[in-house]
Image 1 (cartoon, rainbow, N blue to C red):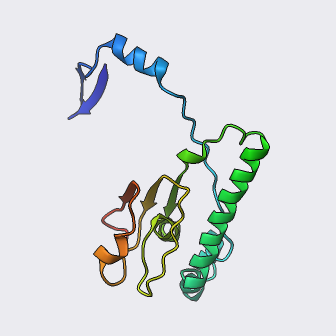
Image 2 (tube, rainbow, N blue to C red):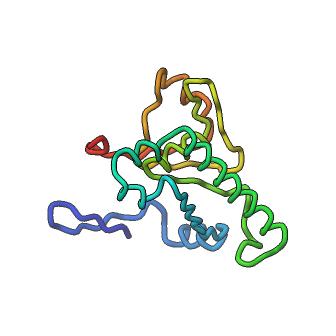
Length: 165
């Protein structure tokens, strides 16, 4: 049974599948437990906000993007090492099921690692993540078609009407 709220009233809707079929799917599906790994990057994190506009501009530099890309690659290398060594809790990590998400400048980092090409032609794509989510992403400079043509894996961009404000 699915519950939907509509105009202050709750109504029920028949499930798309019979209950026995849903139970069968749940019993045979592999268990997937997301394990978030939050990377904190000094130099372009929330502490930078306190330092004013000049610090924010410096935080969104090409150098900071390259540093963040390096941080993500280091984290992925470290996850692979710990998984191979059987270290808890990483022993059961599926390297073929890693996703990446980022907000604001983290979204720029996500876009870069997903395969976005930059105006200078540079690509920083990383093959290990299988899917990407960019929250409040930045538009591509120049041709969007050319910039985003290298993104071939699942990519979800989430933005709002006031993201530019």
